[in-house]
Amino acid sequence: AALASLMATDMTVVNPAMAKKIISGKQDVPDIADLICVYHGLGSYTYEKWYKEVFSPFEVGLHSGEVGGPEAGPAFAKVINATILRGRNPDSPGGETVAVFFIVPNENGDPTAKGAREAIQKFFVDTGPGANPFWQEGREAGWVGTDITQISYNLSFFRGANPKTGYPDDWKKGSGVGLYTFGLKMPYDEWVPLFTSPESDQLHDGAGIYSNIVGPQVKGSEFTSKYRAITVAHVHKNLKQAQAFADKFNAADSPPFDQVKELVDNPQVVVLEVVKDTFF
Image (cartoon, rainbow, N blue to C red):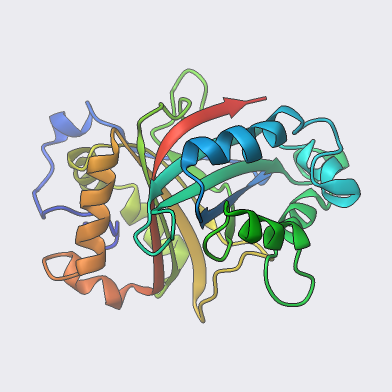
């Protein structure tokens, strides 16, 4: 169970009494929304300058139906949650990554939102055929310093749901988020019970993880694998915990992380800090 959870820190056996006191189980979510995660490194801009000059005006007009142009504007107007994050990026000229996560209803959640996810994904294409010239303008201005990464997945289930609402509490400012995307080499339906087992609960708790959002990739996500691809967002109490956890995962040189390659294909990990989490 510890290995299959992908997030183990040791193989400690769970004390049942303890397991009852920490986050446990899972809350299934109807197929009503997807999470689009977009991030890129900064060029000459600082995070503060990027937010003030680039993203803040976008955020203010998010539901105007005009932000993003005639095709993407109505799609962005359907967004029900936006989370702004930042992280270190030594490979970026600006030394930082900026990220925005959007929760977008699909046609099951809102019939008028049909095609919204696809329009937003198209907006974030920054290279190759169909590239949005907006991103080249950003490179020239200095607020884009790397390629844009866009990961999209279905909101399948939560760990850490508030029993009063059935959903996790809003992400807290200063929380650390590890976004783990990979191809899963075992059947998804076999992995889920292991990931949400009492043993996994204790291991997550030891790493400071207070909620997870988990689900399979959807069409249009940039991540590729020959296996079924899934994404797990691990929300830690702080950035230090998130970074320490990712370092162990990436190093894969101590149990159980030294066996990660047996479970995952082409893992992609980014560590970020929550700046703002807004539901509309």
